[in-house]
Length: 255
Ligand code: OOG
Ligand code: MG
Image 1 (cartoon, protein in one colour):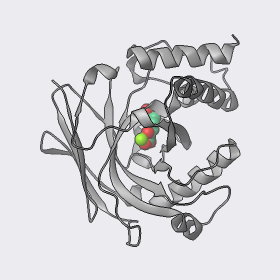
Image 2 (cartoon, rainbow, N blue to C red):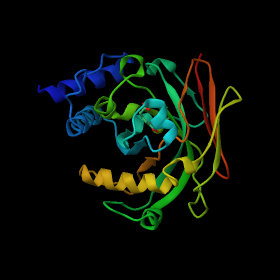
Image 3 (cartoon, helix red, strand yellow):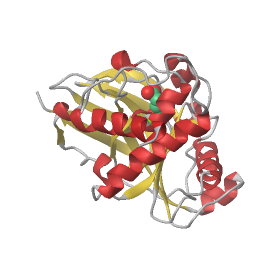
Image 4 (cartoon, protein in one colour):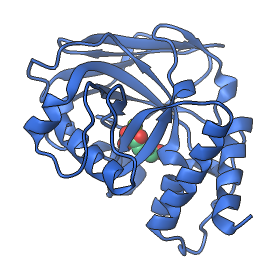
């Protein structure tokens, strides 16, 4: 087993066992290319266990997220079917190490989307949009990492919940949103926080996925990134996002 495979195993085991691990790149020696290779190898382990690839998540597409995590480069990760949890459902907190939640907007694609596309070309490939909650859960101790480490860790992907799909034939560039925990608003924002327009996040996803040799497919979901800072989650909490015109998505963390 080479080094990269070993790191993929460590991170995959950490996710499976909900157990934090030490940083894998304490000397800042890992290249971004190797970091994405580790991510790809860790997802290959999930696919070998029978999970199915369902899309892509984008990270650090808002200033709020960049500032909160102290990193300012766009990153992306791979979504599989077991990460999608039932809207309104109950989630076992035991599956996480130290979860956080953030409000996002999701795209459902009706056509493949590849390479350097324009925003109108990206929109033409969108079947529907929905409000979303992403649960991020770094596998590193104290949720601390450098850029290659978070990339290797599949951009902290852990779970997501989607609200109802809506036609994209509406203006969704500046929709107000509220993240609530136990009925109390904890973050307020707008989809405009995502690179000025969430479609820009989809454009970036098309470019980065194609460059990695895994172009976006019809039927895939793309999570555009957190529009506000993420909030820590505790067992027993109820979380929801309400998005202007698009409705709500929520879940209950079991006590
Ligand atoms: C990295 C993942 C970033 C987003 O939406 O910006 C992300 C992290 O914050 O742990 O999911
Ligand atoms: Mg996110």
